[in-house]
Length: 331
Ligand code: TXA
Ligand code: MG
Image (cartoon, rainbow, N blue to C red; front, side):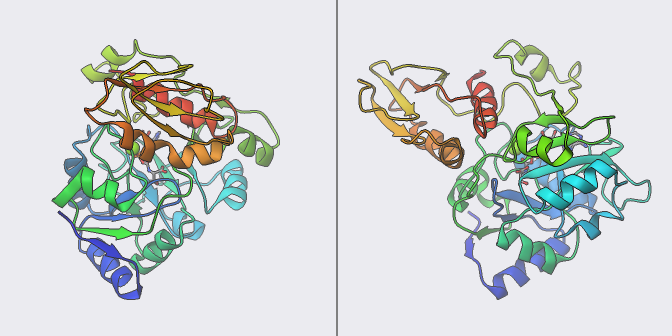
């Protein structure tokens, strides 16, 4: 298993050198842990897909320390400048036209003429990106289709020795992935709800935008697994994703006898269930997002027949939570 390495100046320098040599380094971000590699090195990028067992049509997010580092990679738009200056560093990813001269590996963007780019705010991610001095391609540091990691231990459990180093940076404060926004259309479109809410984006832009993520439950699975016929706007949005081993039952008012219960809000009046965790006893969607993947992992044991999940309001980070839960419930 890869060693979980505590963060200090020396380990950051070592991690940066490993990235420049084409190795894989898992690192903390404020959303989830990322599995990083030199985005311009095709072989290093291929190693990411291999370690995750990820379908190669699914493009990666390119991470940099500051917006200037993006000038060589993408074509800016006015709206992108606005979002970048207000919401970066942070939990939002912008999809922009790829510069024809961009050095980023075509494999990283799965052959698309766009690039998804992000500036994370986590201090360890910032230090690592600065020390490496190169754009870093990084998907969430989990096996493809499984729960995203919000702690270094989750990464070690999911990827083991397929990663060369895991930088330990505590628990991810936000706990759901970044919001992916397509900036190549006349008005921006949310492709994946995430750590920055639609309202926050609209406030910065000064106008309403669309969200094109799939809000249907099951049904899409056939399409998603046969590969060929499936060409979604954000190719990573397979219907089945973030999957625990146990079946999930959503919007459950109470658990059945052998089910584990994932509660939200006051739960003392709810009876039954084989085990119980509460995403946020006070009903705070931010706190719930931070706990989501860790609690799903904890309840996902053969001791239970399934996980019943309480209704989560579709407001604030609840939109991203419900998106992940719907995908986790598809089998
Ligand atoms: O919070 C996050 O975004 C984390 C941390 C590590 O930064 N990363 C992450 O990456 O969640 P990943 O690879 O698991 O998800 C990237 C998402 C996928 O849905 C992918 O399809 C979409 O971004 N994406 C990447 N490039 C794209 C592009 N050029 N056009 C449209 N969607 C794109
Ligand atoms: Mg992922």
